Image (cartoon, rainbow, N blue to C red; front, side, top):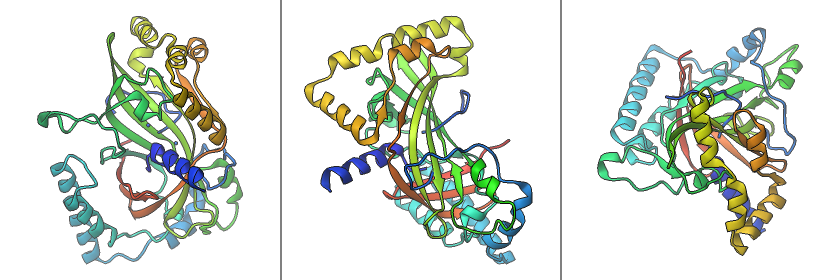
Length: 339
């Protein structure tokens, strides 16, 4: 799950030089083909299509290899627990390297294990984490602006991340093509939303919420175990606890009232110029106060018609664990969620 903020910054650099303790409705995150055309993504791969895929996506596993894999997975999780879930720590990186060398999946796009709902075992590694006292070093806190490239407002509100979820589903359009032989690596497309759950700390109290980043990924024009990724937009949604309680929702509305009008009034000349640049470069549509007022759940969203692209390499994949490395080197380890 490559961080969308890093992809955005990478795209900006190229052109200038040449988002589960609180559940929310899932429409998401933060979320793919390497094409600017948005693909409709919704349903799971047909069960009848998996036969040929199963035959080609796995390597033969001996009993000794299975024992090695099991031990390597336990060791990796031990290292994550020891080092505050940081994939950057050398001991975690070494454990990733060992397990990756035992990867049983030859082609993730064909694997029946690729789809599903996953939760992140690693902490967010993008810049801007608010420094904590030693006893709170396990907390991941960022400003709302830093988590959304200053799109969602008020940008200075502090947010504590409580979990990240990733839901992979085969594109309905791609599934419809798979009437015959479905063993081809070429062109498989999946929805790839990233949903970051958080507590937003405000003068009116702490609000559970989610940032839902819409993305899709595709194996088209990619080598095995690499998928292109594109992020096409995002949404900020109050948690169920807020939406289901009129009093709490009223407090939410007080905190976020006229947030975008105030932000526009406070922008410096340079900030206005940067916003215009992003709107032009990504064909970006930003949230408004009117949208928040009109939506019953007070959600707001943004869209990018010219979306930033990147890729993920699948370093390891089995029935319950996935390890990826993004195009900027970010290692993300996720575990299949309990149903």
